[in-house]
Image (cartoon, rainbow over the protein chains, first blue to last red):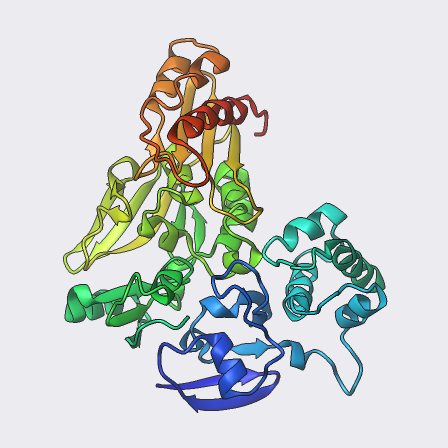
Amino acid sequence: MKVTITVNGTTHESEIEPRTLLVQYVRETLGLTGTNIGCDTSSCGACSLHVDGESVKSCTMLAAQADGCQVTTIEGLAKDGVMHPMQQAFMDNHGLQCGFCTPGMVMASISLLKENPNPTEEEVRIGLEGNLCRCTGYHNIVQSVLAAAQAK
Amino acid sequence: MIPAPFDYKRASSAAEAIALVSEYGEDAKFLAGGHSLLPLMKLRLAQPAVLIDIARITDLSYITDAGAYIAIGAMTRHMDVEKSPIVLQHAPLLANAASHVGDPQVRHRGTIGGSIAHSDSASDLPATALALGATYIAQGPNGTREIASVDFHKGFLESELSPDEMLTEIRIPKMNGATWGFQKFNRRAQDWAIVGVAAWKRGTESGVALVNMGSVPILATSVSQAIASGASIAEAAQLAAAEAEPQSDSNASAEYREHLARVLVRRALESVQN
């Protein structure tokens, strides 16, 4: 089937199998491997990206369901070599250890602040319940999101 | 993990979806948010030959105040139910339960109709709608019909819907003036409930339903009858598992689930939220 999906501002017309997952589409069809596959069962959040500005788990969505939509991946955040404020906050606050969960954490965090611009620490922790950090580095991740909210 | 091959069709109206399902028969499945069906397909536990995507039927995404009840279109997402001023005002128990489904990413995609039609007794919303005395509207080739939530769930992942019928609307009676509580006991933040309870109380009237305490969502009628007869909440909660048939699994034995049901029903009914 043919889909038309705009990813990071570029519109792609692609011929895909209907069973193609959105995460496969961005990683394998488009070569955007910043979005990771972790658990592959919609538990860990490593594959989080934005569809029409909202966080979704791209391992549990068909590319066909994103037909006609605007998709943003971690590669689409920096503008002209300047990192997105959330990326900068993760860097400044050491919000990552091994880095595997980081793209998903950053995408989920941006979506979280869009819906709740000034969250409490507890709201950040609950808002990121769908993202697992295998290094258990949650403390600095939460501090990063709070710092990004402050920086706005 | 990749699903087995299938054909993908997208419906733009309920009538078109029903025409498509009539054409493809039992080989076809409706795809709403996909957060129950796609995991089953990835594990190859489900291998439908045709998926009929109904998530873009915008006519079925709405929340309206219909007087005695709230009408919610089946394709309304959990996040929209959770944040709806109408639901927060007139059925706060439902808004709260919706906020406990999965995690934000799941709630951006999953729909109330998809969750209820999937008829999983471990899901939060079927039991919550049951506690609130919801009515469901189903549309099929011969028109629409009403199904009471108490008659809807027939067995594990089985509902009253026939294969060519589609759930289109959920009607939730207003619960103004009631206190309510939603209790979910699980091991990890985003997990399914090991046991969950949705409950409301207004004087001697109440509605109590249990998540994951049998093959279908369980209406704890003995608890409500006891409250109606003047029993205290603590006394009534002792009857929480009377209608339940819980399973033992790696998370909890049946006996422990019954214990949890009694504790969580008491906590939910003692809650002073309104």
